[in-house]
Figure 1: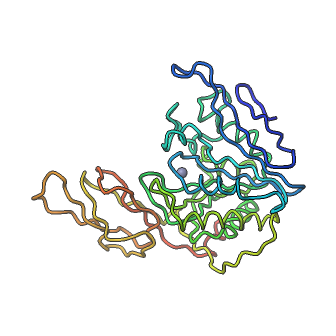
Figure 2: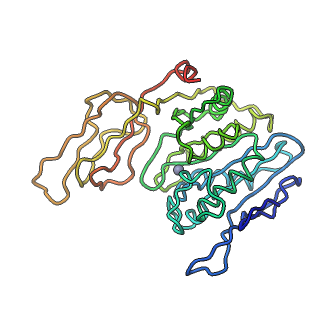
Length: 340
Ligand SMILES: [Zn+2]
C-alpha cells in the first residue's frame, strides 16, 4: 500500500500477477460530501526486472493513449514479459470522465501541475502522489498524449531536454526505440510543472508523445503508439521479440525552429495543406473568410518560415488568435546530440 494524508492506493506493488485498483483521493464539495476520486491504476508484475510506468489521460480529451493502455492491460499476459508495468490509463480521472482537457473540479491542467502539492486541489494532489510515490518505483516512463479536441499532431515522440547529459542520452535512446515517425525536441529544463521534467529531476528516463487527436481514435496513430510501447519494453529487456521496423524517427526542432500560425480575425478557415507537408516561407497556408461579411474579400495567410506541418487545428470556425498550423524545422541527429 502507498499512502500520504488524504490519498492512498491499496495495491501491493511488489506482488506477482495482474492487479486492478485505484489511487483514492478523499474529496468533498457541494455535490460530493464524503466521496473519493478513484484514479485507476493497474500493476502487472512477472518476476524480477525493470519497471515501466505508462500513463494516459493526463489530458482527458486525448484518446489514442487511453485506448492503447486499456488494450495493453487486457491483452498482455504474465508470460509475455518480465519485470513490472505500472499503468495509469486515466491519470487526470475527473477530466477523463468529463471528456475535457482539464479537470472540472479545479480547472487543473495535469501537465502544468507537477510535481504537485500535498493536500492541494485534486489535480495537484494526484500529481503529487504520482511524483512522490509512483515515479520512484519506475526505471522509465512514457506519458501518452494526443492533440485533444481542438488539434491534431503528427504521431510523434516529445523529447524534453535536461541538464543531465547521461539522462539525455537515455531519453534519446528511448525515443529512438519508441520509433514514432517524428521526434519533437523541446526545452525541458525550465518547465518544472511538466511531467517529463519532474521525472528527469528525479533521474528517471521519461518521454511523452502526441498521437494524432481531434477527440477521435486514429487507427494509424494507435498502432504506432502500441508498437512504440512494446519497442521500449524490448529495449529495456522486458520482452524479447524483435520488431521488424527499419523506419527511423525524424527529428523536429521545437527549441528555436517552430512557430504557430494563428487566425487574425474570427471566421471560417480553409486550409490548403495537410499535416506532414513541407512548406516554404511565403507559401499560402489557406484562406480566412468572414462568416458575417460575405462581401469581405478572404484573407490569404502565409507561412512565415519553412518547415514541416506538425500540428493543425481541428475545427473550421476560428477566433482571432486561434492556432491554425504549427510548423517545425527538421533537425539532424547530430544537432540533437550537440544539445547534450
Ligand atoms: Zn496532452
